Length: 319
Image (cartoon, rainbow, N blue to C red):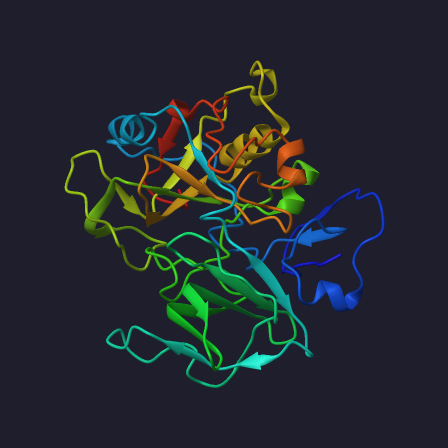
């Protein structure tokens, strides 16, 4: 099946049944795979665990109370999920025009880019899409992408390196890669997410951000706003497996939040949301069979068994 070949840890899955042919794999979203490797360097902020006894932001209780006020962390599984495609040398190359012209040179202006013929951006207003090209080691990241009469258009985007830090360009509010921190379908099937997650909230600080973020799209002046780039961690003292009713999917997310945490990378229209890959069998009525089997009942599943009020905001990502 389709594999996203990265740089670091490999999660080995047990997948029953035959996978798609090579031709099918090159033109379908990257999905449940025999192996899935996390992208970016081992030293990426996304791939290093939270240090022991990290420094906690003095304003963490207020920030968490605001972000966790609904008691839910909404899983962006379909409408605002991230479709991930894998390009091969035979994938068609298409011209891409940026519709925003006053942000500088279009990142895709250097020549045609690999886009599978059946590629579809996410259905929500973000129109997000990611295309991984293992031959060149690059990740094409689109924001508000759409097919056009000749090639494609996109409001903006970025081209990142699979072996880089996972930060760079303008495809997200904080400057993180659009692929960075996305929970993959294969990881949910494996029950292991070997990297930090990425989250969004409606209370992102205006003008201020912190490393590893490069910028912000925040607009909040509240005293309990969270700056983009902030790393959040679920209290590692919690025995996640002992939480009554917790689903396999929630358990995998909670453990990743304890070990690797999550970075705030975008402003959202809700209290707290988590980025997931769109499954190939997702629809308006369901997130796909793997997610459903792991306990995700619908798009925007709130993962209610995770104790979101036990998050904490770290003062810095690396100490």
